[in-house]
Length: 253
Image (tube, rainbow, N blue to C red; front, top):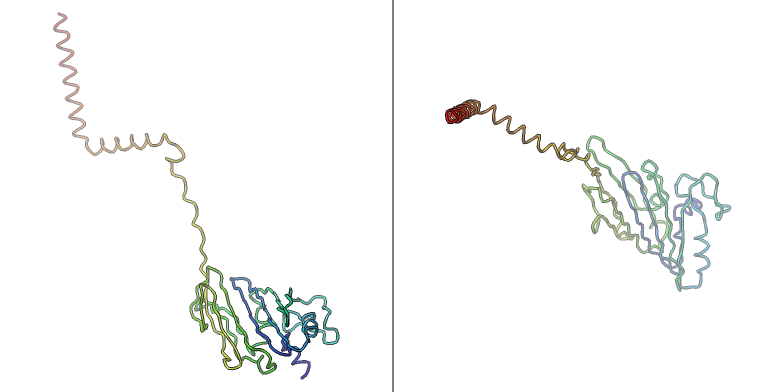
């Protein structure tokens, strides 16, 4: 049991207090997380905090953690990218990891905090869902003050339902503490905004001379629609030409 508890509490076996900010960015293929531990201590145990930070935890809950050599990594496991800032009375530790859609439910971070993680897609309803239920981390550590969960979605996402405490743009936020053991539930889908195929160039754009052809076609159509008028006009013109020729010949005689 002792080893199990150490595994679950991850980096939060702190002496005086810790505020955790869990930031998750979601697009259709990737989940990218950044977990920030704002730690404080009042009794000169900063070295202890730093030694906790040096421990290497795989990002997946089902990958082995070396209890007997916690500062070493196992070949083949996936580990957090991490960094820290030192404070007067503690540290800010930042852990980053990325997951594909199929592996996100194995994330150590979420499985440390919640009993159940649900990640899936309902084909019949055409939406994705993300749920986290059964907060357990406060049962193992009473030095955690708050856990803030921020979930940010790609701009093509449409949120169908959620139980967030606050919403700002595409970011949904939950504030958790020992007196607010709230589950996380959100459903969403993605719009694929693709550019339509370019409009083919019109014949006029390819060949400016085609405008003349179009005019000629319009004249031809008018002639076909007004044949009697055209024939009458031609007949009148012919008669006038004959009369003029006859007049000119008579004068010459």
